[in-house]
Image 1 (tube, rainbow, N blue to C red):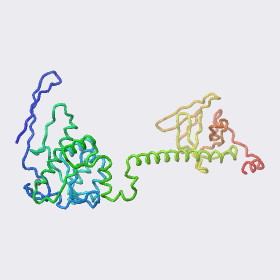
Image 2 (image 1 turned 45 degrees about the vertical axis):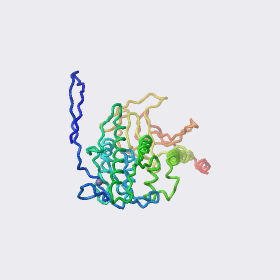
Image 3 (image 1 turned 30 degrees about the vertical axis):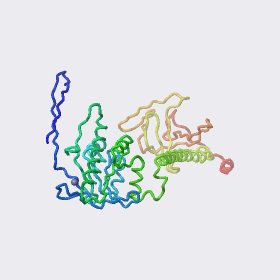
Image 4 (image 1 turned 180 degrees about the horizontal axis):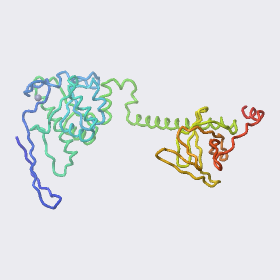
Length: 360
Ligand SMILES: [Zn+2]
């Protein structure tokens, strides 16, 4: 059977174009179920005893997830315990448009013979194809197509004489879809129940029931993220605090270091002895700036004719700048190479008595 749809469309240049879209509907698309005697299928995908080892669903059933359930529960659908699932062409197409990685995972499941997932080409089936109604959104049309197919499956399998009470359960997260499906007398599981049912089926629910509560789970995640962030702040602050404590009791130190990076107005120096990194700035508010030439390519920084390159050895003084009590910091100043007006004199070692007192 051929269905054709004709409509006119305005082109960009302002002309009117007539479009005829052809859609073939067929009578030879089978349901894929082992219990069916009506369909002339050579081999069936959906099993006769389709029972998940779950106490929530005692009767044999096939699951029929809508698009959102596939997108949000693909992990569970991949679980080896979940078998005998009907994937509608409508759902497959929507998933393909919305997420390439999940589409790939769904295709992998469909190819897995052990999983008994069946693709039903409802868009080409004479009894399940529907046209979009006037004023109906594409989304609503697809939801309706999914309900029509679920209904078709239920009726089709109930017509089968060998049927042993096999049911088709529509899985949907969408409240509107669920309500409409219930009006049509279809079995549905909605919202979190979808997740719970599937989670119970794979044995995740028995461990910790609260974990299955969406809001509790969300609150738990927020709390974990908050604590993690605060722990990181505390960690950084603690390192800075103890570094400052360490240098506070040692006065001004002269140490050897190596240049890690050069910047436009500074060099970053690593002091291997302490594993400490610090910045030597060449621009100072109180003094006139020295002549700086920064070469981004090298990279190098030339200060009053002396070039600094990465890994050059330098000598610096290290001290704690406590001028701002709220924001104490480690200061580094250049000692060697000696550059007039830039480098500072090395600090004199402090008398032992004073040092011993500070160390206490
Ligand atoms: Zn059939």
